[in-house]
Each structure stands twice: as C-alpha cells, then as structure tokens.
Image 1: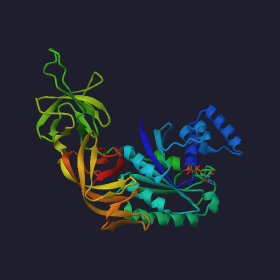
Image 2: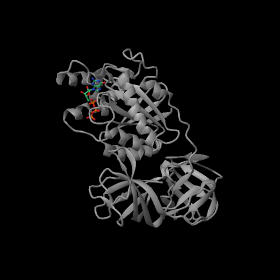
Image 3: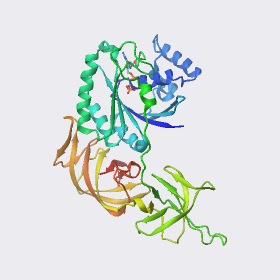
Image 4: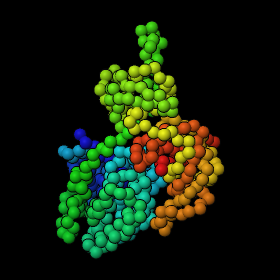
Length: 414
Ligand SMILES: Nc1nc2c(ncn2[C@@H]2O[C@H](COP(=O)(O)OP(=O)(O)OP(=O)(O)O)[C@@H](O)[C@H]2O)c(=O)[nH]1
C-alpha cells in the first residue's frame, strides 16, 4: 500500500497535537482502550471533553509523567493508504528531524493560529519546507472557532502566507490553505458545518487526493562493504554490499565506479539470499559485477547513464545547529552517507533573514545557532553528492566538529 509521509510544524500551542489527535480519532485509528485511557486522563485534568492532544505520540502515560519527546512518528491508515506523520515541536528539531526523512516526505503541514496569523516561525517553516523540496504544503489555519469562523480573517492570513510563499517556494510546489478547528473537528475529516463559505476539501480529503509519481531518480549505491569469502569454493567471488540511496538498479545495467571511473555491468543483485532482477532506494543488497574492477568501501556505484562528478568544492545551504557559530576558515568533518572528509569553510556567501522575512543578507561573518546560510566548502577527499534539488537522497550531508564530535550543521548541496 501507498505510504504518504507528512511533516508537521507550528509554533507552541498552535494546536498541532490536537489536530493530529483528532485526525487519528476521526479515522478510527485509536483502539478502545486508548480512548478509555484518554477519557480518564482528560477527566483527571478536569476537562469535560476528550483532550485529543494527549493522544499524539501515543504517549498518554509518558505525558502524565511529564516526559516530553522531541520527535514522534505517528502512524495511521485509511482504506486508501498509510500515513506517517512526523510530529516535531521546535523549529530546531524540526529542521534536524525533517532532514532525515526529507527525501521521502511528500507533504508539510504548517499550522497557523487564526488569532495570531503569520509569525516568524511560519516563514521559517515555509522556508525549510521549500529548501527540503517538499512538493506539497498544506497551511492549516487553525482555531477558526476563536475568530468567529471569519472568512475575512482566513483570507487575510492566506494572503500573508502566500506572500511568504512567493518569496521562497519553488516551481511546482503546491500550496493549499484550509481553515479549520481541530478542537471542534471542523474541516478535518468532514466538511465544516460552520464555514460554508469554504469550498475547498477538508484536510483528510486533501491528503487522500495527494498523489506524487515518484520522479525517476538517478541510481546511487554507496559501497559499505566488500564481500570476499576466503574459501576455495568462492575464491573469485567479489560482492559489494550496501544500501541503495536512490533510484533503481537492474541486472544488466552498465555502471560506473566512483571515483575511479571504471565501467562494468551488474551480473547479480542479491537480498537476504534471494536473487532479484532489480532493487530500488532503501533496499540493502549485494551486487556483483561482470568484470574485476577496483571497488572499496566508500566508493559509489552509479548507472553509467546518469553518473556524477565527484566534488572537492561544494556550495551548500547550511542549517547551523551549534551554539558556537560557523566561521569562515574553520575546518569540520563533512559526513556524506558512509563517507567523510575534512572540509574547510572557504566562504560564507549569505544568510536567510528570518526576522525580515527576506531570503538573502550578503556579507555575513558568521552563522549562529539556528541560522541558515550559503557557504562554500573545500574537502580533502572527493564527495559523491548530487545537487539536493536534483536528488535529495544523495544531496544532503552533516558537518561534525572534530573536537566535540557533535553534529553542528546540516547541509544541502546547491
Ligand atoms: N479553541 C480552540 N482551541 C484549540 C484548537 N486546537 C487546539 N486548541 C487548544 O490549544 C491548546 C494547545 O493545543 P495543542 O494541541 O496542545 O498545541 P500544540 O501546538 O501541539 O502545542 P505543543 O505541544 O506545545 O507544541 C490546547 O489548549 C488546545 O485545546 C482549536 O481549533 N480551537
């Protein structure tokens, strides 16, 4: 069954947990015992209605103990498809956690509290959704009950968000606006009774209708391990084990080994002892080749029809995650898939001005915690990355501080 992966974002108290909780409730994704636990927990809080926000994360017990979880994947399904919602609270975690699932996140839901309208966070979330090339953004204008279900207020917010979108969205990105009340279930799984002026689809229908043909991505296979059994029988065997990062490889495909540029042909693709005709992104396989080429851990096999140029100088957009700022001239460890290399920041081109909702500020001297900017890196070893825009699965990397060993930035190749 088709799986749709959704990222959610909003500011504190916009009603994200309530929205997701209600979506689970209305799609009957919650078991009877959980509803009973929810009723009891709501009652203990002195509420005379179901506090659906407690459902999110499926962590009622933990919530009661006051434990907060920074990211949770929530699963539910309808007869049509399965859904995975990545619920992430702050903007910082949002960036980091979205990056890991970014290449297959198809929808980003951005919540706006109808009373507050557009905030700095809205711009940030919009910007990140666009930067991550998420094809569809649904702007959920929530708490419409608190503004009298006003069409005028909805249009005001819609215009303001559209103005942000005009600045940062990419060609082909779809943007949809839905006025809703998560608390009262207006425009969640059914058409709102309070907002007859809204002619669009409710949220669930919008999600169900979302359809993205997986664009053909270039085939990339980072070699994690060379299989060379030391027995007589398998004396000549050479298998290359790893996880396909994007695209599809088939038996008979002409491939090129990076960085050597040697060419060969795929003879077998094996997965857990089964021979496959072809395998695609995220599958862990062992590939054997027709000729004896020089392949070692960290090399990459690509289809010869869509090979790539190894990079030693990388222009990238960086989200900075460390309290110590990024400065020009400093050297970090760049980790791209299973490969790493020393990388020196040779230029800091610009940064995003979130406060003034502008995309570019030139001539910057540093990138502080949570700032996003464009830099140029020089690496000691070649990196086999695609442009993120062209192939997200092979276009992102992290920067690690070699002193503290912590991840200090996430980068997207431009
Ligand atoms: N009136 C009204 N209140 C809502 C609506 N949606 C959520 N709320 C209330 O707003 C408050 C915050 O809701 P949550 O769902 O916890 O918000 P959140 O965005 O998940 O908040 P964090 O978990 O702190 O990020 C709660 O008191 C909800 O009951 C709505 O549509 N209308």
